Length: 136
Image (cartoon, rainbow, N blue to C red; front, side, top):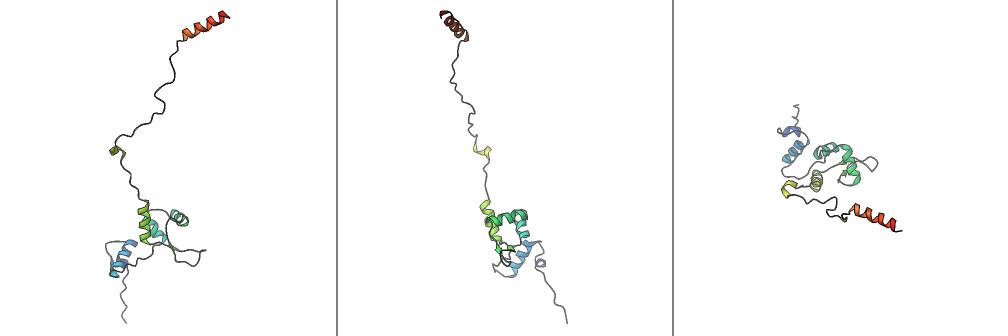
């Protein structure tokens, strides 16, 4: 009896490595089938570039959709779809314009530029006070 040659999913795509190469290999073998494998938390973290604690906190806050493949709520086994992760990244993407190209920003004065004070001649005030004291 001849043993059957085994072909792994990762070996069908010699150019890549990791889970993305696995997804590419599966989709090329399925000939157009759009079924994507669910990503584990480790793979989702690698895709988003965040830590597992951050992913767990975002999942519990309801920011990232997930699929529970476990049994019940006590011991969840979360899995993530690549489309959901890409949608989350697109939602969080921000574009900041370069301030140097926009022109100078108007500066607000921290103190008023006009004064409510007037110039007082102190010698004249002193002389007026002394004359009042003498008149009394």
